[in-house]
Length: 260
Image 1 (cartoon, rainbow, N blue to C red):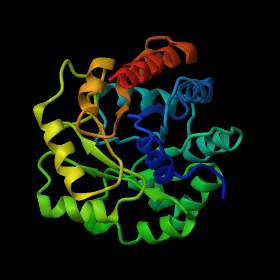
Image 2 (image 1 turned 90 degrees about the vertical axis):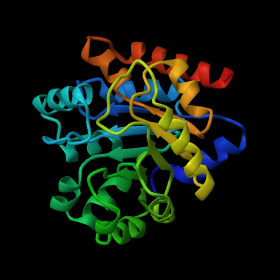
Image 3 (image 1 turned 135 degrees about the vertical axis):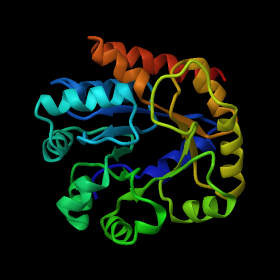
């Protein structure tokens, strides 16, 4: 099976005392987006989240929306993005982030198989509630795709348990209520949610939404196992930066997490 296991790899990193870093790249964002992904890996990413653009990204803030719209104007398609990923070999897990309509239209099993064939072993479908995963999860598990579940600050304790029981790969803790995007500071709810998640699951707990700087990454990782950073990195590309610029930014995040 092509690709790198998500959960096993992240558990291994955590066991070594490493704070996990998962940067995000919008698939199809320019001709060098794959080089951006590779630069992230070289700079110390533990996994990479690959966004498959969708025309109605309900959970994405202005930066990721702009990145998705630009990628779509460049002609990005789910099939094209996965085709490009098939041509690379990276030593960290790849996790697709997209919306359910793409998986539904392709067919659950067909989409899951296409992910694995491209070396993508994880999936995040943020617009599918826990109660409606019944058709996707069996197809994903049969194909070897680990479905990451999102948990929000207002998620009740009993629901957190159910989310974690269904999650594979890692649990994605949402720092704030709202959409993704750069913020000047982290909400106090982030640390509270991370602690609540750690109390009910042994899966890696990785926090995201609004982490923009190395210091914020360190702060968010205190109570969690690691962080996802997305908008701050895509802003570099939208402003004209390239793979080297993004690699340097990921390197600064990696250094800060390693120093603690």
